Amino acid sequence: MASRTSLIGAALFLAALFHFSAAATTHVVGDGTGWTIPNGGAQFYSNWASSQTFRVGDTLVFNFVTGAHDVAQVSKEEFDSCTASNPIGPIIINGPANVPLNATGNHNFICAVGGHCNAGQRLSIVVVSADTTPPTSPNSPVPDARAPTGSTAPPRSAGNTPSSASPLAVGFGVTAFLSAISFFF
Ligand code: CU
Image 1 (spheres, rainbow, N blue to C red):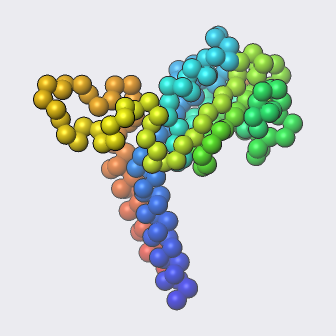
Image 2: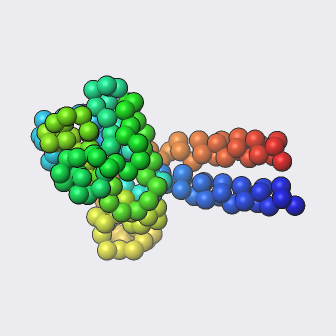
């Protein structure tokens, strides 16, 4: 009885996992610049963040060399003052670092190495729910459901979401995970 309940729970968990994974995006912080003191100061990461839509289930990748930088998630107050005396969770000192986005709302990251945050190595983002439409989309609720004559505009131009490989990869992952579960139960 207990194992059957666990199996059902696992199946529901997998369904939820599949749902979120199918739309999940990996955001490489700063793209090719990585996580460092940017030439453009704090505006650099601010500009980068405004080019992205962060959803629950997405992942941030901070590319940095271990020992040169770190990643501290902090409150808005500590972000503004460039301090990390009361970080949210342990400071990540090993790079590159993957940070899953598990909750909606404001998330603030700084490098706690001396002077780096004040020099611009800080990132503030807003995470929306997994199903939220990007705020930059036009007011038509259903994109390209009906194609008006003469319309040749692609539905999206700026997005660089990898879409072709992920459903297949997720499918393999789920299958492997289900096999593992059926082995144990
Ligand atoms: Cu740093």
